[in-house]
Image (tube, rainbow, N blue to C red):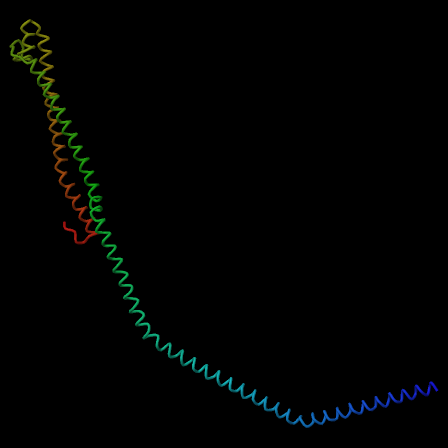
Length: 250
């Protein structure tokens, strides 16, 4: 009995499952029918979508070609406009550069005008220094001439102290002064010696006077060049100033 009850239970459960399977089968059948009925529409929609995609692709290509053509035309027009634009740009650049250059030139000229007197002074300096040295050399030669002349005069004065008038000897001649005194006192040798010394002194005095004359001549020749230094200094100053200020007056 227990086995029969279980069999009945299984049979009942199997019947229920069969009913459930049948219901599911009917649902599947309905769904399959719906799918079958919807397939043509789905396929048609897929075809439409594909066609639309193709048209969109074609439109995109056309738009790209139009864009490229417009870009080429715009580029060509831009290049054609460049020469005219460059004329204006160059003109504007030249005007700006001219203004800048004129300002710089004005500033430079102003600076040069300020520096011109300084440049003139600096240019004169070497010639003025050379003139001072030349004047110093001339003064040194004058001093040397005065010294020689003074020494010559001293020798003449000393020689005159020995000169006198005696007839004791042709070598002594006319003697006065110390030589005369020596001769008068019988010192003939001393008188002759003083006569010789006097003669040497006079000879040396003459030589010194000649050397003094040469020194004075050298000084005079140097002094004669001094105005040239001044002229050259003035020329150098004018040239230096003119380089910075063309309107400078000589």
